[in-house]
Length: 286
Figure 1 (cartoon, rainbow, N blue to C red):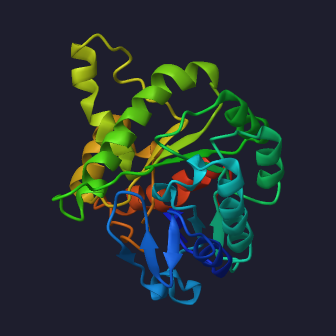
Figure 2 (cartoon, helix red, strand yellow):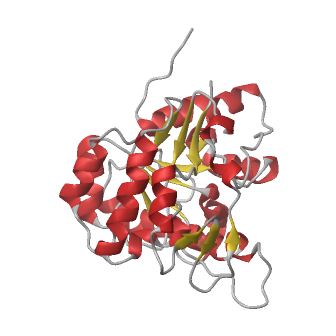
């Protein structure tokens, strides 16, 4: 059975916390209000766990583009706590990534949250990956998920603009920042970059041409997740990084998990073996 490492599901407690606010981000009924963006009508059916397709396990995470992690702590923590409480009450086929406040980091609080049973920590790609938070993950041998952060569309731009332009740019920057800055300080940290790290690994030839190094040396602790891409992009990433660091993700309810298009062995690696390795789990064999 497959594992989906990237889904979003707004539970009742999280929805109620958003509705209790009067400043962005907030919900008015099911209308989402964010700074710099037009109101967005959320479909409540998209966040019904009874209708959500999962494999063996689906990991849900906080919707980082809402900007919750960067709010002042007195605003950030109530929303994060509501997300945590709701996520831990989901049916057994769901797991969850923890979230944390970045405007006033609290490693001790993160440690307590992780010990409630979360798979690891998600941070926005726009946040500085702080050593004191990453140390908590390393101590527990838990992974980090890097997800796009807030990105306004802007006047006159189409609705797809944030997902296609700034999200990709954020992930591209995060990939190279983690390689150049974070990895030397945290050699044992496992990290998963959503949306194939914005296809940043495919720029290795340009990296070498501009003075970078280590092309061809794949970091086995840096994984990339497949959401919103299909066989062509996945094939290109596998040619650059190999199949062992590619993991399955859908970004549901906004997209569905792609067929890697690389045959049964690669599909099993991407959907089963590699996600288990990312999460520090042994593969079940029958």
